[in-house]
Structure formats: C-alpha cells, structure tokens
Image 1 (tube, rainbow, N blue to C red):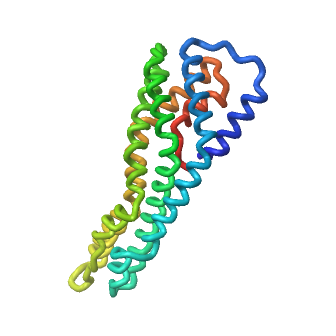
Image 2: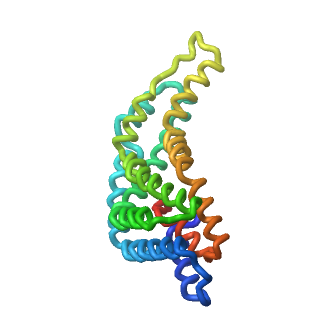
Image 3: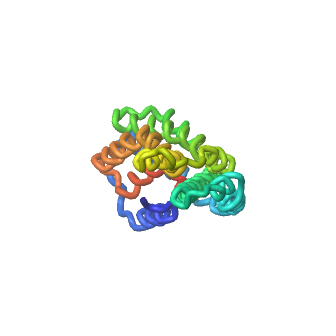
Length: 234
C-alpha cells in the first residue's frame, strides 16, 4: 500500500504537471474541492504528527519486553510453548504499536477529517456509486475513531492474561497443539482479524467510487485522493 508521504508527493506532482482539467461533473467538482482542502490540512500536520509518534513509541516501549504478561510467559516450563507464546506476543506488540502510531497521526487531523466527511455528506452527491463512497467515508472515520485507540500497553497486558501452562501429561499431541495454538491466535491474530472485519465495511465501496471517478474522466491522482482521503496508516 502506498505510504501517506508517497501519496502526497504523487498528488502534488499531478497537480503541478496536469494540463487543462478534464470536463467535470458537479459531483466530481464537489468531491475534488473537499479532498483538496483535506490534503492541505494533511500537509500541514507533519510536526504535530511527529511529536505524537514520539510519545506513542515511548509509551509502547514500556511493554516491549517487560510487564506482567512477559513474566507470565517466561515462567512457563515447556520450551515449545514458551517459544510459541513469545512469538505471538511479539506480533501482538508490533500490531498494537502500529495502531498507537496511527492514532498519533490521526489526532492532529481528526478535526479536518470530520469537516471533510461533513462537507461531502452535505454536498448532495447524485451519482449512486459516488454517494455510496461518501457513506463509506463516514464508516471509515467512525472505525478510525475506535480501532487505533486499542494501541496501548493496556490492551497488550489484557490479551496476555490468556497465557497459561498447558500440561502435556494425558493429552494427545494434537490436543496440546490445538490448545496452545488457540492462545497463540488470541494474541497474534487479534489485530489482523479486527482490521479485516472493519475494512470490509468500507473498502469495496471506496474502490467502486474510485473506478467511477476514473470513468467520469477524473485523473488517477485525484481519484486516489478520494480513495485515500482518510488514510492514516503508514
């Protein structure tokens, strides 16, 4: 997926090199104006985002290798189980740190993003595909208000409460593997499952709106501007 910085550069290059604008419908003109306003706000938020990222990284560093959850894992006597849970905990921590970073990028832009969504909702978009894309932007913003907030050591410790010793005695290997694998998945797949379930709520409508904008003669850069308007990740 394109990084936010690369998308900004691509859009800026497109604006500088574009020839006469293609014929635009009232719908595309409204969306273009709203997107342009939001991207200006994004370009001006870098310092505040950098400051927030520093705080988020510092906060997440506290549970990178320390805390009650890690102590629980290290007390396990079974080496195979200990390695498995260590791997799952590391994946969970990296995923949560990424969410904390997304939240740090979001906060300086939350006001501008809210105004953007309010503006496109009030624009009276008549094209049904583009209107569905507008509705998807609201769903995405709502998700971004909740999912990144999970990025904390508090969430990390809560998930690691599931860590426990699983005795091999009297258990078939398959049963042991299944029980230990469930605990691993509870840690390692937590954010992946959250992302997949939430992205399904808006991704197809935004991609359809992108295709529709292209069909209406909007440039690829401007259509990408709508598709990635609320992007905060990476």
